[in-house]
Length: 387
Ligand SMILES: [Zn+2]
Ligand SMILES: [Zn+2]
Image (cartoon, rainbow, N blue to C red; front, side, top):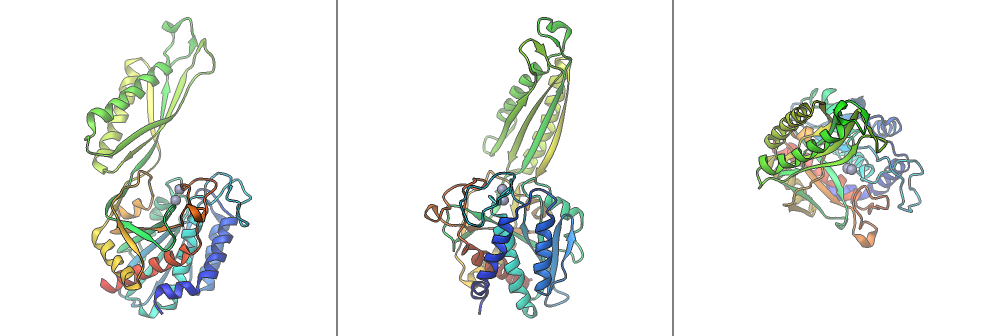
């Protein structure tokens, strides 16, 4: 039996895992129930899992002195109410509307598949079940806790569900496939006072407006027109009444780029422009990068090696050209070790999968679990075979 056929035999178990996780979602960096469930399931399979950086890790080794390939799934949900109408829908104030329950269940499936064929592995597969992808902190937390060492990781692969694509179809990209993301908070400090006496105040709203305009000009004048870049401020708060000049104001926004040099340049310039604009109007401004991740860069050789594994399995994986303006914190792994990433079709509009990720009504075809587990396992096995 190949990995795909073996994954078919695991279908019911993966559905049980997925539905359990789906019904018990947790948000952010602290996922106690989810982690205990994964620890228990891995232990059942004969692994010796351990907690690391808020997540869970385990390894399976065939040839002891071989290389190490890392497989990553994210486990966190979103702080929103589910409206899928499914019998196992979340009753909590959070929900798995980004499909991370699917990722976790398919990686558990892959762990079983690789465990069953451990003797054939030409090295080690390391599993990374991470928290906090949605808050762009989980990958970094596990990296800081040492996920890439002991044993040292040589290459890695992550995955994501994708709606509006039939289950049983997947894809992968090359080059840069998702944007960097920086959640910026700009705090403007002025001096409050009476609206009728602006001369004795420092108006932070006026400063905020000039900062906003200057930052839009920054993109237009300093970013290469051929580069994709977005700077959106979705929040601008300050003041409570028409005749009171407040003492502070806050702008919050997100910067997205596909180029690390451009990102570095813009972050530096945003800081300068905010500080200097505030000073020009006698106030002060401070920029904080609340959470961030770099753009996701695919390594061509890793992608090609893994794709050979998929081909041998007969998995339908299309090479995709488009970039996602969303971001993915697996990028932090990919910035440190050669990596690849694949997407798994979650079903079409007819299957109830016709809305975007993070939509409260999203549903996925669970057959996608078979496909995802086989893609994880066969990709890792082939990469080890070739290295
Ligand atoms: Zn998401
Ligand atoms: Zn996601």
